[in-house]
Length: 119
Image (cartoon, rainbow, N blue to C red; front, side, top):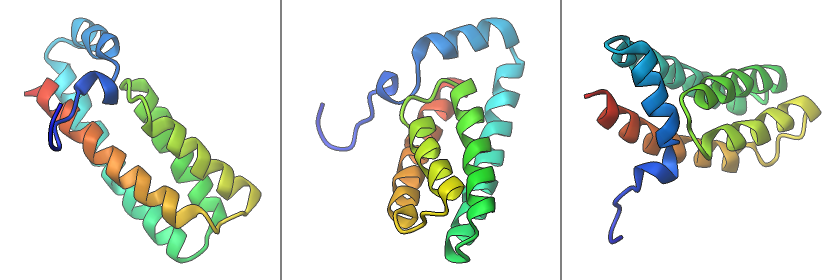
């Protein structure tokens, strides 16, 4: 694979997408749209919480983003969120900017793949 091409199965579990499409049919697109909007809002809240060193908000927002990302079959994003959640839980915030950057990048990959499946 060359350049910035994304292998969708490396980003989101194909079997989860297939299962959700079978169960939800036309509502799959609604689910993806809702997830993407919610995730973008949570990422903005995380960014502000990291800037404010608000461990409680970091923990809560990372936890929510982790769960919704798991439900849609994201592979790496939930683990990154779990690490950020742990930082908030232990009030160890020195690694949060770097983790947040990884979360932003991985979310963009998830967004790309889910948008392709929803179209």
